[in-house]
Image (cartoon, rainbow, N blue to C red; front, side):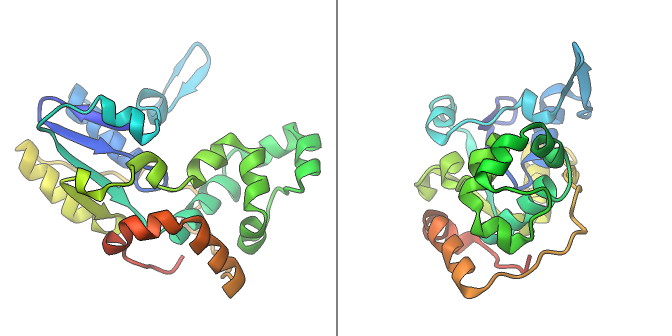
Length: 220
């Protein structure tokens, strides 16, 4: 989805696993004047993504005001998938979903603690099993479109310090980008063989074609 801040005339287009939780918290503060804090409504825990839910680019683009400075943050697709694996599969509620949907998990052949190569080998099955995983592993182009010229600036996720400085200058006030999604960051990820890496290069070919000039390739 995109967040449109009329006060500072900035529109941020978000892709999952590209610091989107942290940047949504920044724009919550810019819009409301107080820090984001997770809360409960009628027994349901409300996350920042409930406040700013995801949407395909074509939908988000329609609501973007004219004249806004538009930016996005991207990440090497394989590193992004590894981050999703550590944050959504090895930790978090994924194991509970497996237990709650044993029949479907068995039919698809998905397991609670797959190695990263096993996860990649069976990526289609894991995406089918979990809509949450599907959304977090969809190509960035689904959320950011296929025309980089639409944006005034595209940042690699390694450039958050630069983005923070740019937002501080544009907003005329100190802007600090927090680190919200720390779960699983200390987990080690097993490397991929050439065949599995090629599978991901093919799967994310559009992202590499579009955003290749903006990516900093880092080891997972």
